View 1: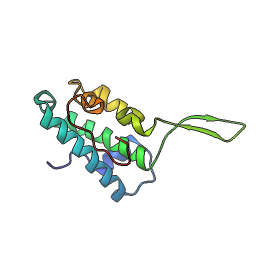
View 2: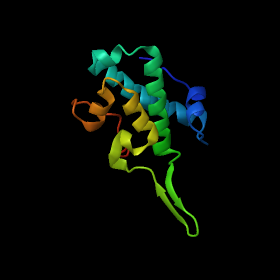
View 3: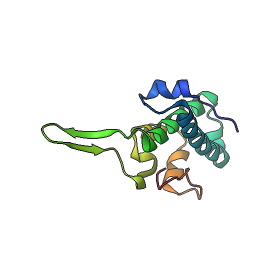
View 4: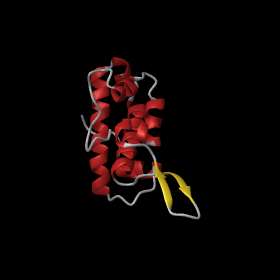
Length: 129
């Protein structure tokens, strides 16, 4: 299936220094995950093009955040200390974008994929996702 989102849409959701070519790779990962969810659930497939595009965009942002632009969760002033969002074994829950995608999916399919309860897996690269 073809991708639903694009570079211009992704950068509306997040500020990044990733190149368009890099973001296109992360879009492909998100698109693959959405395609898997469509194949697994008729309810997910019936969400419609607009919702599927939004979810794919959030997952593209999730992968961009995982691999290119990690987000600080906590920064302490007065000393050099940064706590980054999530960890590699948290899947979609490791970023705010992944959490938003799960929350915006009314069918629960993305949550099931993330938890491994469908037998399918989200795209996994370097243990993230």
